[in-house]
Length: 340
Image (tube, rainbow, N blue to C red; front, side, top):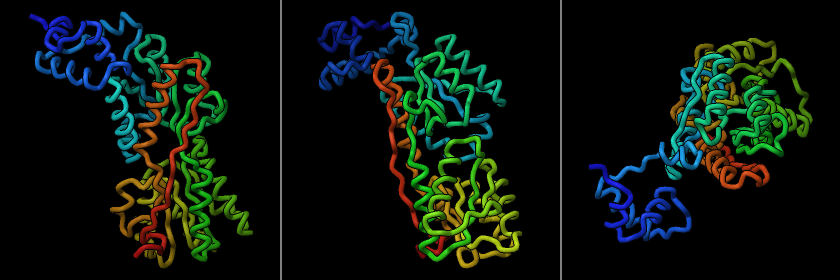
């Protein structure tokens, strides 16, 4: 026979309404009562019927996740498993499930998001990227559907929940680090200019050069995808210049790995011939040869705070949009001629 809320209430010696509130994780219930009720639930093997609850309170207890591209391509980059770890930790704490967008093209992903919204399959959505004039972000904004962006929205940023690093400042500081080490010929290998994170970092790089009175050189800047192969292609182009850079800023660790491999293939020594510094401080940065100097952007925290921001906006829909800045830090390793 199925275990009911009344059975749990009887064993825990509380009212059935208290059990319901514990299941809903109501903050007004004391931790002691929650513990007592959860122990009774575990002992009796009681599992709340979330589907029935969802129908009753018109909540799916699910959060939609939208990747920047097909999951297969995205998961090649260590950023995404780590940001998902932060997202799933916060979602689990609040007893929310996750629904990931499927699709390999932009059109397919857009249709999946429309399906999530129109079918009310999710209570809110987290966008794991911020693209220039993105139709998915525009659609969610127009529909007034709850969502949070990891990154800085291209427009309406004062009205959209978002969690981000200060990418302008981080790139400026990383460029200044190269300048302080005596470099004036500094190359920039960025992601797609369609991504707001790339434009912010490029502006920070330009500002540092300007402050140091170093001329900006167009041929020192290459933008591609955050992929291993694109890093290889970019460095091949930069090092073929008549006056190649003596230092490089690469805006993603996976690209930087491609950069290091290509430099090695070309017989160019890092950091003696070329200093390299990167972004994200994923585990591959530490495991690279030589180990990569990289900006720690606290990827896990970005994911955790994104869900926290979304859930707060679900509780208080009329509250102003939240803008959360996650701290960054430059981790000095061998690739920039720093730590030995």
